[in-house]
Amino acid sequence: MGMQDQQAKIEWRDGRVPVSTQFDDPYFSLEDGVAETEHVFLMGNDLPGRFEDGFHIAELGFGTGLNFLVAWQAWEAKGAIGRLHFTSFEAFPMVPGDRAQALRAFPSLSPYAERWADGLSRTDPLLTVIEGDARETLTGWDGAADAWFLDGFSPAKNPELWEPPLMQAVGDHTKHGGTFATYTAAGNVRRALQTAGFEVERIQGFGRKRHMSRGRKV
Image 1 (cartoon, helix red, strand yellow):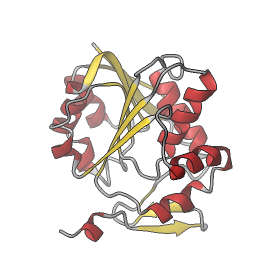
Image 2 (cartoon, one colour):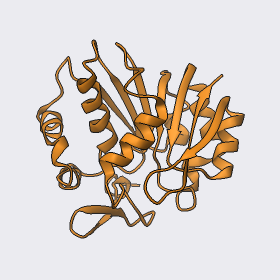
Image 3 (tube, one colour):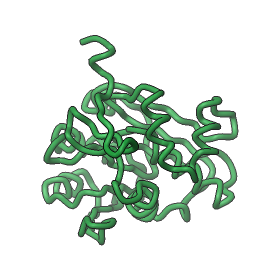
Image 4 (cartoon, one colour):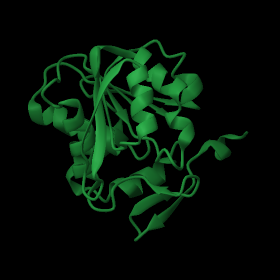
C-alpha cells in the first residue's frame, strides 16, 4: 500500500468541518470542538490539575491535532513547570494543508497552531505521532502514559480501534494510577477497558451525547 493510500481522505462540511470519507465521521464536534476536548479529555482525565514535569498524554487518533493544541494551551494556562509529553497513534495522517484548514475553525488556538507550524522548541511539548495501525504500533511502544485520550472514530464505524486486544495494550501502557477518557460509552468498550485493568465509570457526555466514559488503572 502506498503512502497516499495511508493518508486521511476527507470532505468538508460547511467549509470548515473535516469529515472522514473512510469512516463517515466528523473529526470534531459540529458544536464546539474545543469545548468537547476540554470536557471529554481534560476533565475526564482530571486535567490540568494533574499536570507536572514529564506528564505523558497518549492518544489513539491524532486527527487534526486539536486535542494536542488544547492540552498544550491548558498546560501553559496552568503555568505548569517542565515539559509535557504527548504521543499519538494515527493510522491515516492528515496532510498538513488539510490540518491547517481544519484548525482555522478555532481562533483561540491559532497562536499554538502557528508555533507548532514553525517548529516546536525544547520548552514546548514533546510531540510524537506514530503512524500506522495502532494494533501493531502500540504493542511495540516502550512508553507508558499518565493519561489516555481515546479519540478514534466511533466504535460502530471504526471497530478495529476499540477491539479488546488494543484496549488491553492501552492498559499495559498506562502507569499505575493513570487514567483514560473517551467520548464513547459503548458497553463493549467499557468492558474491554475493565478487563484491561481500569476502574471504569460512565459520566455525562458533551452536548447531545448523553454519556462518556473514563477510568483509572488499579
